[in-house]
Each structure stands twice: as C-alpha cells, then as structure tokens.
Image 1 (cartoon, helix red, strand yellow):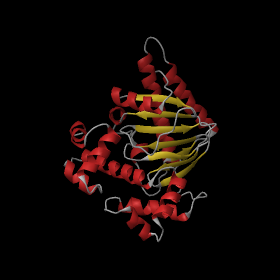
Image 2 (cartoon, helix red, strand yellow):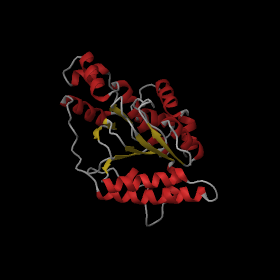
Image 3 (cartoon, one colour):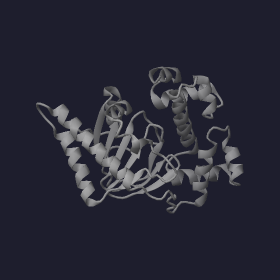
Image 4 (cartoon, helix red, strand yellow):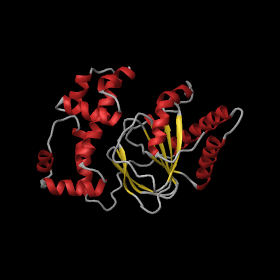
Length: 284
C-alpha cells in the first residue's frame, strides 16, 4: 500500500475504495478546521501536537498518543507546534471494518464504545509504539505477489492489537483543563447538551453573562475554531446519525437543530459532499 502525504488524500482514497488508507503527515500538511468525515480515523502522534478537540473533549497530545475517532465525532487540532508536527493517520471505511468482525471479535469497539468512562486517547508504551509502527511498515511495505493479502493480514492484526489496548487502557473521563478559561468548558458542555435547540449567539452570550464579542474571542482562542463552525459540525454529525437511522430528511433537519432547511442543505452538502437526500439514499 502506498503511504500518502495528505490527510485529504487518505480520506478520499478510503471513501472511494471502501477500504483503508495510511497517511504519514508532517507540519507542511495544513491541519483541517473542525470537521467530520464518513470514515473512522486512527491518529497516532509522533512528535506531539499540543491539543486535540474531539466533540466536546479536550486532550493534550504527547508523542506516542493514539486517538480513535468515529464518523460521528467532529474534531480538530486546536494548538499545534508549527515547526514539528509529525503524525500517522489511518482512515478506515466503516463497512470494510465491519466485514472483518466476527461474533467473538468486535473490531469496531474502539470506535463505538462511548460510555461515561471512555477516552478517545490511548497512550502507548514504548514497546507498544514499536509494535504499532511495525504493523504500519508491514501494511505500507508489502510488494509483489500476495501484497494485498499481506497488507490486509497486517491491518487485521493491528486492529486486534489496538482494540485490546483500547479496552485495557481507558482513562478517567475528567476533562483536561489546561490553561483555557473554565467558561470555555462550560460553553462546550452547554452546546453539547443543547445542540438540538434553536439559539442565537446573543442567546448564548446572555446565558453566560458575557458580551458576544468576548464570547467569540475566548472560544476561538481556546478551541481554534469559531462557535458557528463548531455548532454546525455538531449539528451535521447529529443529522448524519439520524439519517443513518432512517429518519426522513426534514425530520433530521429539525431534530439536529437547524431551523432552516436551506441552511441545513448547504451546510450538510458542503461537509459531506452529498445532499441530505442522496446521503440518506446511499446509507439506507
């Protein structure tokens, strides 16, 4: 398998081939703003990256940290080292991963188990880091006769190994406070709980007794994205989930907090590359 040098390329290859793709990325690959995509993602930090925002949770990033992100979780790197930012990203098509599962072995568990005590992050030991990189080399180094089977075998072994680590190394769910204002965590919690409700920026500012301009400023400086982009990504994530469950398009629009179908249509199509109706059709 060819190793890619862009996160966009890895996602596109994964979705087009309905398979998986591997990217080895550096600081010259510009990080994406808060986003969602229809593939599962494994993010492995080689050099660290300061801070990750996944849904409404912040994580510090150290070398050897590995994150599991499913297709319904918005995410972005909020603070990175602009000089050194090396990571490996695996994009995995959910249907392909599901096809590898057995009644005894659920390889989707690391992307699906999201109870109160879970963490997206697993900090790998030095030995486990070497083992993970060994699998990556096997996946990307296979050539010639049987290379397709060898890369699939290495991928299967890697997913068994990573699911074991996910199950055995879960952290306490307390949020990492870092140096950001406490009100930012309160805002994220409020948005997470009220994402289905209609509200304006002024409503949000009034709830926290802040001016709209100050609210926007501290949110952007702490998360790396705007309130509007964060809320839109969360609502599209919810809409995707509802459409995959078979909800009609208009009902998915209403229940995901979009008060206007035109805005929902534009935002959903821009984020997923498909209109809500086509997305519903392809995922039914």
